[in-house]
Length: 112
Image (cartoon, rainbow, N blue to C red; front, side, top):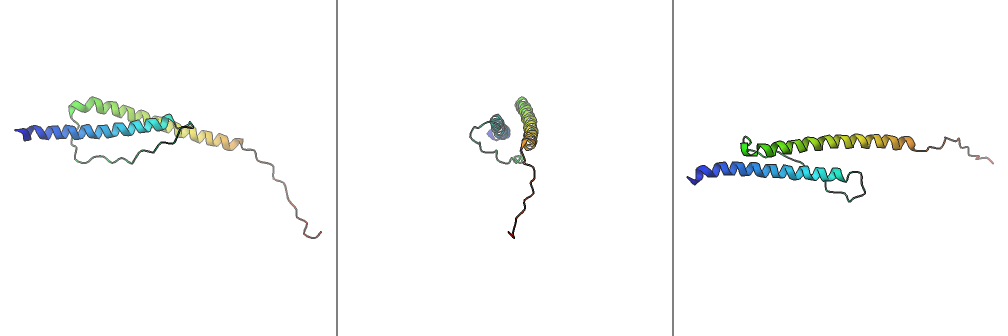
């Protein structure tokens, strides 16, 4: 009898762990975005993510949590795209403000 209840518990626990790992990754990405344009110490970039194998369908009891996580992921993705766009515009503006002296011809008198 305990075997019948153990399998669903393991399944829900596996999903719980997978969502926890994703939540930590999103929190780390949010922290990186928060200090992106400051002089704060550089944080370690997130590790590459690989989907867990063999989880099966999402348990109904975790659907609300998964939807909230998805909303956070979409928000972070949007903010990353905006930050990248801002960085490109700032780089272009900085390049345009560089003062370049006019080219002056240089002659070298080797004979005299």
